[in-house]
Image (tube, rainbow, N blue to C red):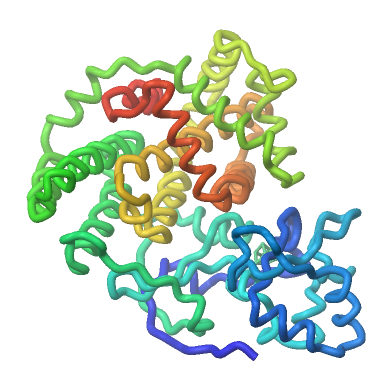
Length: 413
Ligand code: SF4
């Protein structure tokens, strides 16, 4: 029913090894979300007389009538009240549409997940979201910096999102900027928090150049930053910063609590419940002195070493996000706002790991860190753009609107 094409694409090295594990999946993508059904799939499903699918469609898929109902969100599939899974999810943990009618009848959402396919400034690319547990295991566990390779990809052509440059940056420059940001996040001669800081500096400076219509000077900024990475300039700056653990814990817990209130994912709530309890949050309230003391005690207990040993997971998370979303271009007008979101998400993951360490002690292991990260991605990265903007606005309102103000939070201790 839907038309497929094959294209050579740039993909992260983990992608060709990924395969959906279907019935064995511990956090199935059919659970916890309303599945959007595009118009073409909806009309084809309505036409079907398949004895299994037709009755489910009749009472389980309904038209969206709200202002956001377009071609892609034309209808939605209900969740089963008992299981919280999509109405099409069978007891043998397979999809009735796929089983009875074939892959071509799957709504776009189900056909593409967990893949993101884009054409960014002339480059076709595909990557996976780490909200899928199997994708998270494949991508987050790479111990060497993530590489990008070419692969032949089969995809519904209409699902390839296209992005072109709006401003004076041409496609080649846009791609230079994107891959500079990715390479910077993978620059392992300095700790990850310092790479994030340098990335924030780049975004702040580049925004100023863009505001002054000096886009042509961005390559010089990149060159000077690359040169400065090998000097004493950054280590001296970072050594002079006074870490503010109390603000760090306060910001991360506040953001985690914000999402807890709106997340429907039971799996995420379990992970987060452990994090919040172990960091002294009771009934969605916390005493910052007590939570900071617990955070620091967990660092002493071994969370500090755990974070250092598992820094590659955090790096892979940020690199995958930057590649998938075309950082820094995806964040609209302000590249620094895009950085603020990346930074806020990083802080939430770090805080979650430390909270879990406070709960599990030395039993905290790599699998637990990957699981916590996956559940955070599922809860946060699929949130609407308006929600991400709200988080960035909360950060700014609390006074963290410049890199200088954020550095004491970013510094681990
Ligand atoms: S979350 Fe990933 S592994 Fe699990 S069922 Fe969905 S695509 Fe498959």
